[in-house]
Length: 301
Image (cartoon, rainbow, N blue to C red; front, side):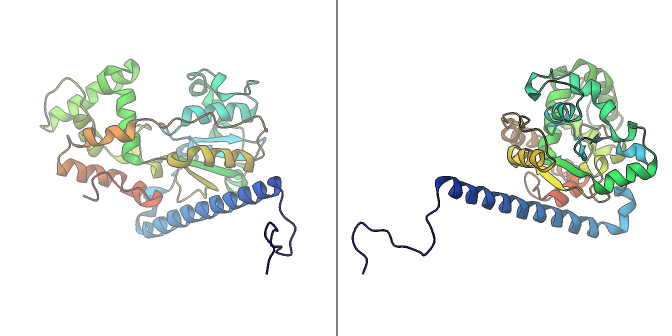
C-alpha cells in the first residue's frame, strides 16, 4: 500500500520539463512524417489509376518544368504554384539561394520575387540534361497545394474581378468575353465568375494560364517524386519542417500565416453556377481533387 503524499515509482527516473518537451516534439515529428507518407501514398495510387493516359501527366520537355526553383546550397527544389503562397515561398527561396542578404521574408517587397524568380529556375541554370536529372532524383523536393476551387476563386478575385489587376485584366478580359459571346453564353462586358468558369471549362488544360492551370500540369507530381507535400491547411507546420529538413539557417522561418477568407466566400460564388457548369469544372480539376484528397464544393457532380 502506498503512503499518502508519496509518488509511485515506475522504476524509471522522472522526466524533466525539457525531456518531456522533447518527447512531445518527437511525437509531433512522427505524426508529421506519417502524414507525409500517407499523402504520398494517396498520390502514387492516383497516378497508378491514371496510367492509361499517363502521357498527359508527364512533362514533354525540360521547359515544361519551368515552375521548379532550385537551391544548390541546400540541395532543394520547389515547384511554385501561383495562388498557393508562392510570393512568400519565392521570398524564402531568394534568402536560401543567397540572392539577397535580407533575412526576413516579410522585408522583401512583394513584387521583387516575381521579377527575379527566373534566375532561380532549374531549367535556366547552366546544367546539362544529366545534371538536371540528377538534381531531380536527389534533391529534396517541395510541392504546396490547396483546394483547387479555392485557388481558382483566389485567382479570379485577385486578377479579374472588378478589373483590380489592370495588366491581367487587359490580357484576358477580351478573350473571356469573346469566348462567352461565341458560345452563346451571354454578352456581358464584365468578367463575372460564371463567365470566367465558362472560359476555364472550354479551354485545353495544358494551355490554361498558370494561375488556374491544374497542379498536375504545373508540377507533374506523377513524374517527379516530391519529398514533402505541403497543404495550405497545414502550411505553417509543413513549411517549418521542410526548412529544417533541408538545413535552412536557424533564423529563417515561414512568415506568420493568416489564411485567406476565400474558403468562406466560395459558396456564394459557386451558387451562381449551373449543375452543368459545376460538372465541367470538376472535370478540369478532377485529377487534383483525387491526387491531393480534396472534396469539390457541393460534392461530386
